[in-house]
Image (tube, rainbow, N blue to C red; front, top):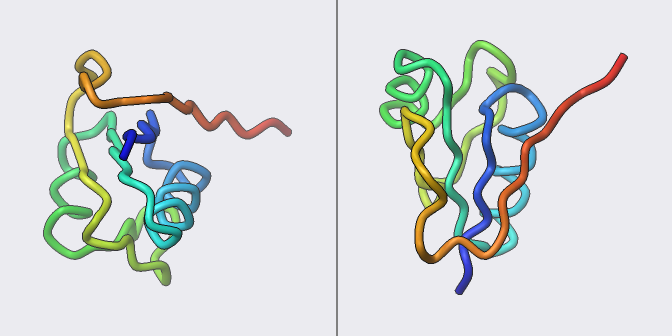
Amino acid sequence: MATLTIFGAGSWGTAIAHTAAGAGHDVALWCRRDALARQINNTGRNTDYLPDMTIPPESRRRRTWPRLPGSAHSGFSPCPLR
């Protein structure tokens, strides 16, 4: 299965990762901040943005912004607008 890579673990990125992983997709959720990546990895929650949502363990979390993984089929960068 191809990986959906989501750049940014804010409220949009977290919600999309949750939904995509729950639908059976392979998801890589990349965080800008190391502390947030550790929190998500350790607790399965993003208390900064969506404290009541559990991120499925199938979502792989990263703490840096490397290149897309070789298995990535698509990348997504959620950007909310006001």
